[in-house]
Length: 180
Image (cartoon, rainbow, N blue to C red; front, side):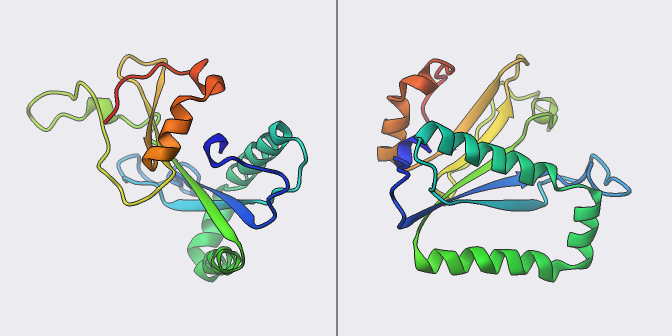
């Protein structure tokens, strides 16, 4: 969000955060671990109404955590039985997009998936990557092969990536691997 220059007084812009959630373990009964893919995007709408930018970011993160935690077996069952409810939520997001500028950040996590163990007959991968996707502001989190770290594949426009690379706060926590 730092690269999008979030401003508390920018009432013409709505920021949405979407996070793909793995419903396999949240269903009752749980789906097999061999089902692949994430099954749900949970939109989190963040209205810029907090004066302090740091508090604004914390508010967005806390809102996303609450939303993700609320997706349990009951929610999954309701989603399966009442697809209209999910469509209604998506319709509300689309309607908001027509009224204001919308900046959407999309996250998905491949963490804890055995992606480094896949072997199609020529050995396990040394490194993973993602294809060039047609989405802006898409962030894929993945465990490092050595364990203990997380890689982020960031799909952003060059100008926004350049801003992110110069972000001192992020640089304190990151070690660049390579640019693709």
